[in-house]
Length: 135
Image (cartoon, rainbow, N blue to C red):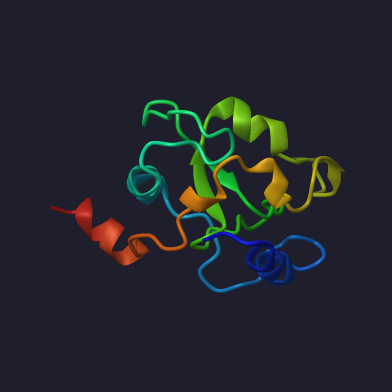
């Protein structure tokens, strides 16, 4: 389950500039992202962790517990959940062209999540998701 100590650990991994210099944290390809989003949404039981409402695959977006950096996205199990576009937009940081944070929050406080219990702490590994598309 997502706890404040898990959030703190993700913030430490991301570092002060939120550039996520951690192996395996970069944004996967589009084909894998589609399968990953479906996998995460299924693990959440079709519930948006941000607001607690029902969420359909047609509108689900990736939301980050610790905000993405300008270069690397922080795609690590437990740091990503599926949410509504409006829920995602309410917490998404905005960066300028140089990658500096203009506005937004750097780490999502657990109090902003209606359902931290549905944030998946694991997902199907990327190699398996990739292989699913090659059948």
